[in-house]
Length: 184
Ligand code: AR6
Image 1 (cartoon, rainbow, N blue to C red):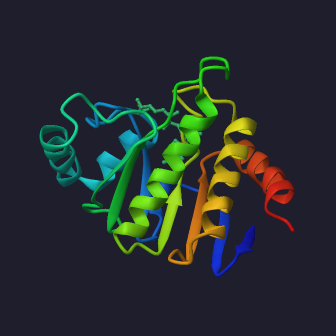
Image 2: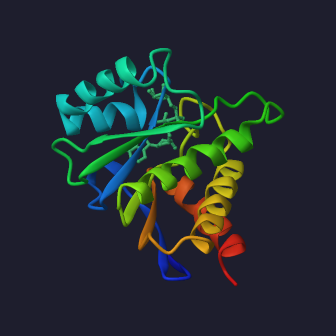
């Protein structure tokens, strides 16, 4: 499924983010930047040790106490097809009244800003926070789609944003929400 916002394309696909050939893929990391399960585990496994080395350097030099929720940093893509990995930390779902939506929007927005600042033109996102962090898929999809749409409306330096959904059910939720949110 495909939408156009200004000069940019938004694509929604079912797949594995580690297989994407966009300039960058986004990692749903945790504050430690030392890896984990889900998307994070898959990226480090397939991307190889260079990614972790750079994450360690970022911890030493930039974020000694860990990357705060909603912020983003960038490393090499190592052995991945994508040249870069942008690591961001989504919020843990605590019922929805603890600023989760704003923090999730920050994670998307700061990833996009960092991409533009590095000259990246195509980027893939997983459904940040919707696995181990428990964010409900419907609410997360709404935040993701609206934040990316608003960003692309003000910015012409990105050509393509891909939402990569791992399961059929997640794909279906995004598809339905995208028809509401992205269709003119
Ligand atoms: N490609 C695309 N999507 C995937 C993939 C994949 N290869 N694998 C899982 N998903 P999660 P979070 C989906 O748990 O909720 C890690 O341990 C998955 O179905 O990866 O932000 C980190 O280290 C779900 O919809 O990220 C953190 O500690 C979505 O990706 C913590 O989990 C996100 O699930 C972050 O939790």
